[in-house]
Image 1 (cartoon, rainbow, N blue to C red):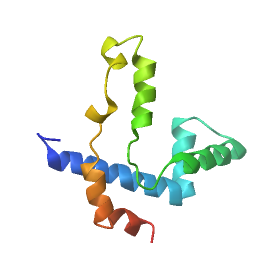
Image 2 (tube, rainbow, N blue to C red; image 1 turned 90 degrees about the vertical axis):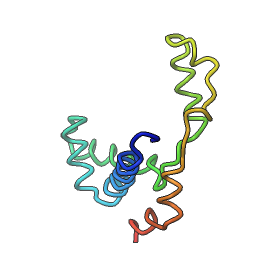
Image 3 (cartoon, rainbow, N blue to C red; image 1 turned 135 degrees about the vertical axis):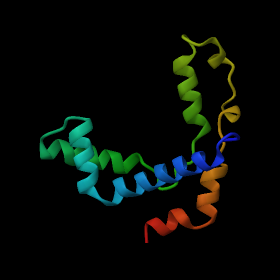
Image 4 (cartoon, rainbow, N blue to C red; image 1 turned 180 degrees about the horizontal axis):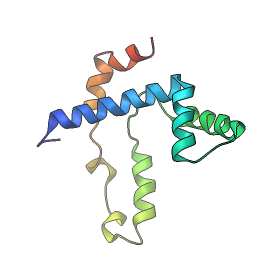
Length: 109
């Protein structure tokens, strides 16, 4: 972020917009699921889409618990993961910026 804040801002904005598109436009989301997960049956697509909608938050703030789970999985392969502090890996400034400005809420109006 320090070297390319504009690129970081555009990546986060695209991520936020992708979540919005996937959660409000079932046809686009199902087309992506069909292509990337190779789901062909309509029932499987419907189920996958409902699961997707159920776990994608409108405001994708990272959680410390999520990082802890990742570190726990990596601990056997990467020693530093055993003692890593999730706070050292989380920076929510850009998401907060989009949230405070009303941009995220505006996508869903």
